[in-house]
Length: 247
Image (cartoon, rainbow, N blue to C red; front, side):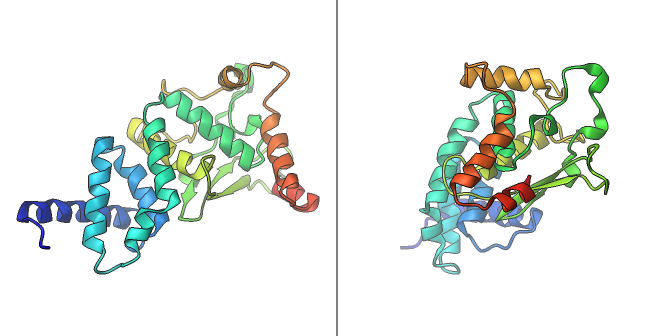
């Protein structure tokens, strides 16, 4: 059945938004679950959340003759999880989104807390130790960023952190995508990756304050990011030598 002219015009506008998004981010127009997931996160920061479903419907309808698998991609678990996660994350304060993104990046990237935040002592707070936005790389399978060199880095190359896209509600990929969009909207010219709502750099005490709101026991500390991630890999059957090479 033919669409009403006004509906066709609206759906064409939705498709143009999708194609513009793909061009801006150097993504192929094929509507895979990953690409549609990125599109959702991107659009949620430009339109009302309730309008996202309408945009998806328009994109799916317009692309269906060219990409018959688009309907299956729209109904995939990844898209369902993305819509569910975005609905919650967009209602969070910026600092909560920052903290949770850092928590999952630290856990899955086997990072120490000091690689994500500043020390509390002002005399130890070095801008050269902060991760930069220009070193962030995102594709459909993973994202990466650079932790600047430390005393043990004799090659002065920094630590290249690569985190893969995972299935499930604890996927750091979706959270980082939302955080980066929020970062670009709030602080488009800020050079550093991890930024609080007040444009300050997160410190150890700031991170631990949020941490203990979720995990009240003060016997738990920031070391659990690295140790917990390593333990998770070991329980998954990853060889100790490989875990050591990761971090």
